[in-house]
Amino acid sequence: MGATDVVTNNAGVQIEKTVADSSDADWDLVMGGNARGVFNICRAFIPTMPPGGSMINIGSISGHVADPRMALYNASKAFVHGLTRSIAVDHGPDLRCNAICPGWIENGMLDAGFDLARDPVKARSDALARHAVRRFGQPAGIAAMAVWLASEAAGFATGQKFTINGGLTAASPFNPGLN
Image (tube, rainbow, N blue to C red; front, side):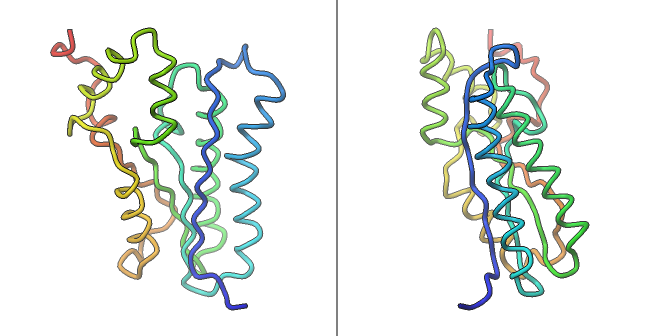
């Protein structure tokens, strides 16, 4: 078996609860998948990767801005960001490690979030208005960033968080046009 040049950790378990409402089982599920799972894959592959390898962890904008009622998810993605920086510092120059921090991407997690809203249509409309590009992202956009990070063109990038969110976190939350 040959060496693995690129590892991408893409874990995303989400529970919509506050800290006070979260149980130990919720902790085990979310932190187990999003934090421990990513950690274990990194720990297993780092010793086997050849010099110049690229490790890509999928974080989230929720790791640096908190989504309401998503305490465990927010914390787990902040862990991924910190782990990414630690791997870059501890294991460079042998390998590069970066995180992609997606915003709202058209997938099952996005739909599940809107399904919880009192008025899902209004919630979706409000969310779209908060994106500078006025649309949600597509999985292909995240994949394209991963391909670039795995390439030699990104050879000087390590320990970084690449936010891809259509401008969602670029603006102030105050938007008089939403009223």
